[in-house]
Length: 331
Image (cartoon, rainbow, N blue to C red; front, side):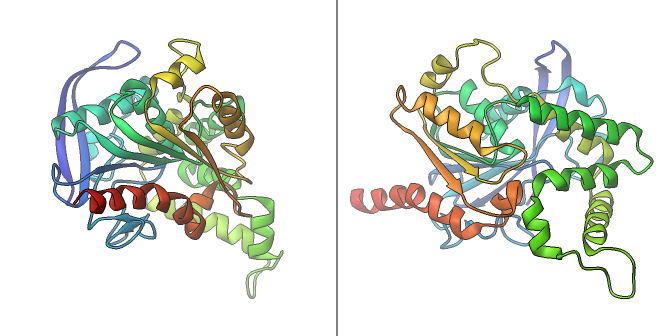
C-alpha cells in the first residue's frame, strides 16, 4: 500500500525553500521496529513497488528470496515528482532546483519520521545507487551495508554529457519522452546485446528492422506511463551525484562512512562504466578495510542489474544470509 509522509519547510541545496513536499513510500515484509531494515532506492523510471504484484525486483525481494521478507523489513521511497502517486499536484516542474543530495535528505527525513535509526542495508541501482551514496555521506554511521549497483559516487563527464543530450531531447523534441527513451536505451544496452537479440532481422511483412521496432515500442510505452516533468527531473538528478563536492577530499569522505561498502558494477556498462568503480575500489581498499568490489558479467550492459538476477543474487546472498544466521546463533 502506498503511504505518504508530509515534509514541511525544506531548504534545497541551492537555497530555495519548499513549504511542503509529499514523500510516498511502501513497506514490505516485517513491521517497522521488529526486524532489520533494508532500504531500496529505485532507478530513473522505477518506483517504490519493489516486490509483489508488478514488483520490479521480484527476483531478489520476497518470501524466502535473497532479501527475505519473512526476516527483513523493506522500505522503498518514491523520488518526489516521479508520478507514482498519480496526483498531478505532486509533480515538480522546476526540476533543475533539485539535486541528488536533496533527494537523499528528503529520504532521510522519511526514515526519521518512521523512527528508523539504523539500516541493515541500503541498496540502489543506477540513479537510486547514486542517491544511496549521498545518503551514506549524510548519515555515515546509520548504515551497516551500503550496496550501490550499476552506479557511481559521482557523475562523470560521460554521464553529464549524455544527461545534456537527454535534456535537449526532453525540451526540444516533438515527441520528447519517446525520443529521449530511444537514445537512453542505447546507453542501457550494448551493441553485442542488440546483435544477440535482433540479428539484423526485419519485422514480418515489413521493411522495419526489429531493432527499430523494439526501440520505438520502448519509447511509446514509457510515454504512456511516465510524465514529462518526471523524466526531466530524474534525468537531471543523475548529473548532480557527487559526494565529494563539499570537501574535495574523497578519502576523508569515505573514511567517515562506517558501513561495509559493496560496489557492484556491470563489466559492459556503457553509462556508469565499471572502470570508474574499479578505480574507486583500488584507491580506497588500502585505507578502508570493509570495502568490496563485485562485477556482474553480461553482454547486456547497464540494464544487467535488472536482467542478470542469478549473478546479483549470488553477490547479495552472503550479505543477507550472514545477518539471518547471526539471529539463529544468538537465539
